[in-house]
Image 1 (tube, rainbow, N blue to C red):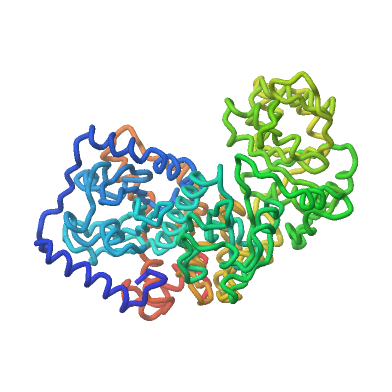
Image 2 (cartoon, one colour):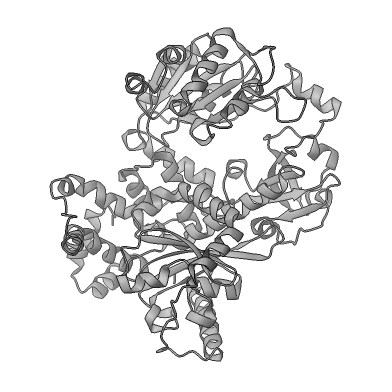
Length: 629
């Protein structure tokens, strides 16, 4: 069984209990599955009721997993607390036209209607579950494998269920860990949305490296220090119910100190007198006046706001080392830096390294994700506005004496580019609604994954702004091109693992990770390792803990040229399906091989027997997939 936190016996008991409930509901294994959708008007009403939840899931959470989902042949479904499907995202090609009705908006997947299934059983148990093909109570539903995790609202009441489903015959061990991470991300965003304006937010975890992951404990507390809301992860980390408890009592520190702690600066706390944690505080968006002695301490130049972080972005790669040396040399001079490279290639980490080793390390490092700011609000967010209200300063003034990192600068609208050019030329910023200018001292680093010169030719980027930001141009290599991949893999694993998890990766896994094409670069690598850690628990990560689409990426990389020369004919749908099946038969064989290899935990004899092939043939297949024996 693939459920990380369930032993085979626990999984068996969970499925058995579900089947017993189905018997009580009057179902039998031969019952026809009810995949009838409610009327479209009722679907729209439900979607309107859960509009924020749908937007958070589809626009804020799923994009982080697009590289993993892209080659998985998976369908993501969001259902409400009754099992009614609100929306679907992803790939329906793995199911027949007849089965597609089962996975549409408006279908109800509660156990009472459709027997044991991932969505319904997650609702019934309140836990994340994975239901394999033959574990479905109704035979008509055994065409798929489903992984589902509940989403709880800010009061810890069941709000919805997130599900990832796929073909029952495709190995999808990674989807169980992934769906848990996605549901956790949604819960965190729900807390942030409801409480960030008027409450203090605390993120905590077992190490500082994990404070920016979705696996944080996340709580909201009020002016008096009473915990108003906590995510499930927080209560799991502390093994304690936190609602309405005192943050001082739980974390053993003074409320005054917590409320006045510099935002984003980690502090060490001991929770419940025994759990060592690291935490960061975010003050209310609507404002909180920092106590004078704390504010003066933060602004004193002789006392740093933060300790110099130990960030390693290179372990001997010549191109990165040379780029870092050049950038460090010019950093404290009036020379702008422009970074170019693929998405996820480490541009922000490179900038943070420069900031940490510069004379500006005591002052803010502000990242502006230009592609994530709407054109309607970008003026106010960059330049601020004329008001005494908290949050009116603007990102440029927030970076005063520090570093302003403009990520994806190519996405800034032309109308804003001219205003930003004036800031660079005059070293002053004029807040919206004001005729006065405020002097600013900032170091600008920009990045782009697009060719800015091509955009200039198309009239989409100002040439005068380009020459202002491109003093030293640096091209960062893709992860697959780096010579220090092995050490980077080890360090990322070290940073992501919990303190009680296994300290090392197996040589076999390191070899697989090194050889992978990594189309998503560092971002994809971190996702893959996070999922593998989730699947491995306290064991050393083995090949069967890696996501199945990880191997699909490898197949795709090896067969790209062949596929380009043999494009399927999409003019005829029937022939297209057949061509697609033929084109990817090798990949499907590899997936079947990997599935049995995973199920048999790497045992060659049992895997070969299950596949009906010789050990030598199996060795050749595994070698072809990069699985070293």
